[in-house]
Image 1 (tube, rainbow, N blue to C red):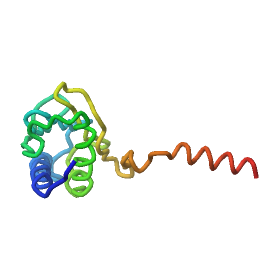
Image 2 (image 1 turned 180 degrees about the vertical axis):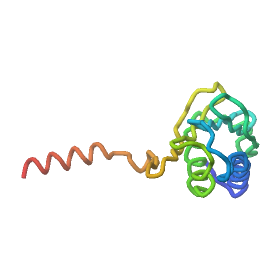
Image 3 (image 1 turned 90 degrees about the vertical axis):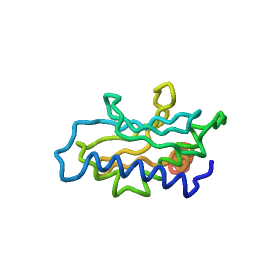
Image 4 (image 1 turned 90 degrees about the horizontal axis):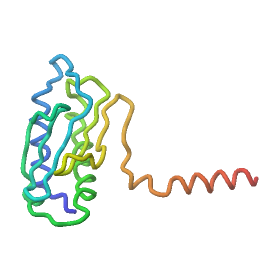
Length: 146
């Protein structure tokens, strides 16, 4: 899926609005997750707290009426990249750590954990980790043979 400049700007604007609600100077809020709910029909991105209260929203025009079967898999990397690129915003919310950004679908089901904020913890993009188990098994087999 394309990650155009317009999509990036819309997601960054929503992230900035979220950061304004949780400024560093404020006492840390008791949240565990920030839910990012994306509607495949409307392209609407709604950011919610643990109690399903809306914190901010935006519309990603490119995602309106997207009928791709793998829509959520495609946008996972797009949103994850935006959170990572804007880590100065996503990492510095006045929320008790650890907290996570979680992608949800229209039915409010969790699709993916996008980004975890906990000092030293980082979620690595699963595509980078593909085949790691096999590589480690092969390495161990070769080591034991020696």
